[in-house]
Image (tube, rainbow, N blue to C red; front, side):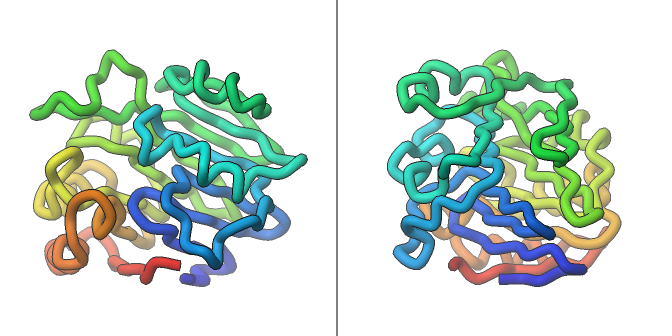
Length: 217
């Protein structure tokens, strides 16, 4: 866990994070949670970037969702979440909303040189303001123009290649498009594809800001 300026970042593996700030606990794309994350049911908000099984995982949602939880999810997730009976706000790229006093901006996330995440699907990334920090979870994406609108303090960036950017592409996106003011954290490795070597290569290439590689919790 990284305590960065009073905001606590826990990497849950793959694209998953638990972020705590003040009285708010936020999860993003929980998947294959470790046993020490089971049955917490402490989420105020769960963000889901798209409908693939490694991002929208009912088995993992049951460990984080509680009576107070609101789900914010890409519109394509609607049918699956309706079946689960969860309080859900469906969003599309370009949306802005406030959920439990957390300001949220929704950005597109898509592939440009592969077909796993078509732009037409409306898969998303999120910029959320927690503890005074603008935090950008890019979702599963390649280098895209929409990244320039994020203006984050902290960026959570996929680095594995295959389905998303390679480490080299992620570094280029971070330096030239995202330009985090404070910190970048690599994700999308050491689960389905990618290794810690991808995270280390990303760290070695990024010049825009410091990079913190988190241990999985």
